[in-house]
Image 1 (cartoon, rainbow, N blue to C red):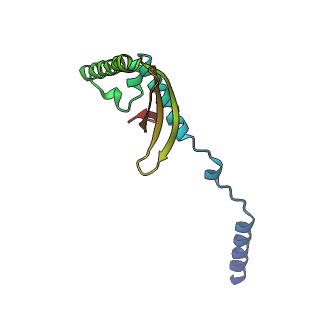
Image 2: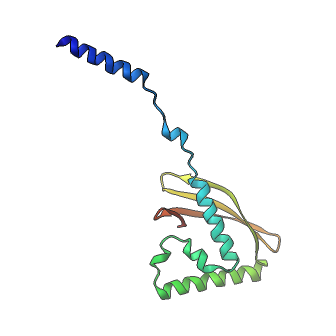
Length: 138
């Protein structure tokens, strides 16, 4: 009986040594920052093209906005775009500067560069969170 236990231990030890272990985390590329940046870029391009509804759709919790609040948000976005058009001659380009995942906050901070028609530019930080499996503006 003791011999059987010893053989079982040896076999277990040998099988552990010859077993090939694959680190699946090392093989998986985390694209969450890039994916979040793509959504942030899409949202801000839509906003400055006047597609305020699309911009709002890409905001977290926008599906919970009631009719009056939803309409007020769209109006505020339209007024913002009008203000930028008047004071800075509109947004001519939006580009991603960088995107950084923040594990502690479970979000991605996306830096976008807004280039205005009057030759100036501004870098903004867009916090992105996962909402129902999709990246949304926080």
